[in-house]
Image (cartoon, rainbow over all chains, first blue to last red; front, side):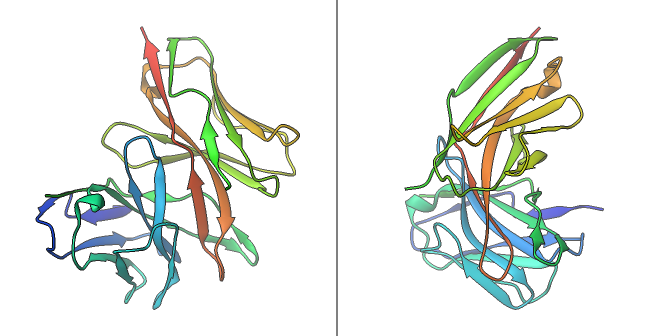
Length: 117
Length: 115
C-alpha cells in the first residue's frame, strides 16, 4: 500500500496564480485533512473532511478551498496565491474506531513544498 | 486562548541514554493527547496516544506520562538511538463537529542523538 500520496511535491507560483494540491489515500479511511507547516509554528489545520462530499473549516481556512468528490481523494485549491501561503502542506487521513470514538492516529503524506513569489 | 506547547526547542542526548520531552497544555478540558515524530523531509508519524482517564501509557521503548493537575505531559524514550533523531510534537485532539479529529500541534522539540 502506498498510504497517503501527495502531488506535486514541489511547486513555485507567482502571486495571484492558482493551483491544486492532490491527496490520495488507499487505506479506505473516512477522514482526511490538510495541514500547513511553517517554521516554529507546528502544523495548523486548514480544512478537513469526514466523508465523501463533505468538508469543514479548520484553524486557518482563509485563501483555500477543498473538495472531496471521491472517498480516496482530497483536493486543496489556492485560487489566488499569496506569499503568505508559502509553506509545506501535509495531507493526512484517519479511520473511525467505532461509534462515538475517534483515533488521533493520523497517517500523513510526505508533504508538498509550495513557494509563492 | 488555548495552546499546546513544548518547554524546549532542542534536546541533545547521548546514544543509549533516556530522553524526556515535555509538553504543556492550557485547556483543562482537554482529554486526549498524541505524540508524533517527524524526521527531516517527511510527514509526521504517530508514536503513542493517551486519554485523560490514564496517567501513563507504554509502547515500544516509549512511555507517555500525563499529569492533569499541572496540565503537563511527557514522552520518555528509553535507550535513545540515532534513529530517534527527529522533531517530536505533542498534539491535543478535539473532535470536529460530525466526526473527524482537529489536532492542535505544539511547536515541536528537536531531539539530537549524539554518538
